[in-house]
Amino acid sequence: MTEQTGYLVLSTGDILEGRYLGQTIQQEGEMVFNTAMTGYQEVMTDPSYAGQIVTLTYPLIGNYGCNDATKESFRPALAGLIISTPYGTPDHYQSSYSITEMVENYQIPTLYNIDTRALTRIIREHGEVYGKITTDKTDQPQNGKIAPNLVQQVSVSSIQQYAAMPMSAKYAKQQVVVIDFGYKHSITKSLLHLGCDVTIVPFDTSFDTITTFHPDAVILSNGPGDPQDLQNHLSVIKQVATTYPTLGICLGHQLIALAFGATTKRLPYGHRGSNHPVKDLFTGKVVITSQNHGYVVDEASISNEEWDVSHINVNDRSVEGLKHKQKQVMTVQFHPEAHPGPKDTHDIFVQFVDQLSEKGAKQHA
Image (cartoon, rainbow, N blue to C red; front, top):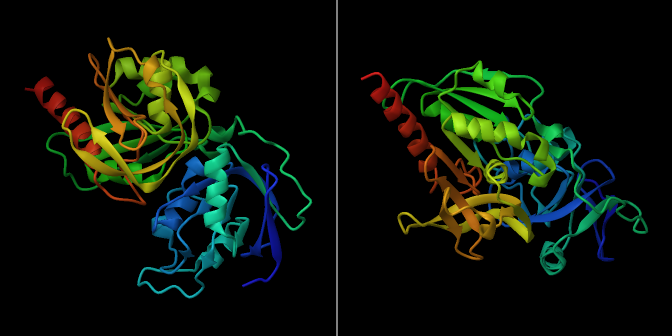
């Protein structure tokens, strides 16, 4: 473990001293924090963290190691990682390499021995904070804004197709197209296990191209950045949602809302962790969810004639889900595939696929 001194220089004027874990790389990004107690590898490989320096609030990171099966993307997209104490000798039967080896292999700028509690308080107090991982404490973050092309950086560049796992759906196999704004691999795995064939298409795929796959449904994935930066794609999204049964997840939820005339706004410091309580307004049930987002749909901008708010965040009452009153379109702000986090909301996928199967069965009756 290197003893190179490193600094996290913040746009607030604060400077935190730590040590580099892995290579001495300088990088800047938006500062965010994640409160999950486990799942550090899933957090590190979630494409929604593109452009962000992620602070892990749990004090010990790396105790159960890392492996290739748990990754949520082909390679990490986060700008950097801040942790308190790394664990160099993991103990788990599935462990293939350590957290140190992971940040070295993927060249993730990482500082440890940072007071992550103090850093989290700074982010909570100031909201929008930018930082730079550097060896020079007089260095300053230059950007001070979220890059507008983050989705382009993490979306697949070509179409990918995956065949269903042995059938577990009630009726015929479903063809599902996932529009990739920075999708987590667990979304695909969840659909495959439910008997769906899955086609992943780039975020800027045309409506005409999507129709060539004759999808039974379309899913708009999670992803990084400000949803307002994708205004040029809203017309395609509305075409999709008015033609096919559609599910929006996280950024996909926000984009569907924008496509139907709603607006989005930035949260003070985002929802990132695996312990966020959400209430289903149809059932009254409260579930614990995995979340990673800095923007929400403004409830005041939602058309009551078209949409029902299906879920709300228990802590701040923000919109966590929408259901169209006429069309088979639903959205959720949280991550039903979890990874990391509780699987309380995996039933979102089950219900969505079952509705497709029931519709198909009626059509062929």
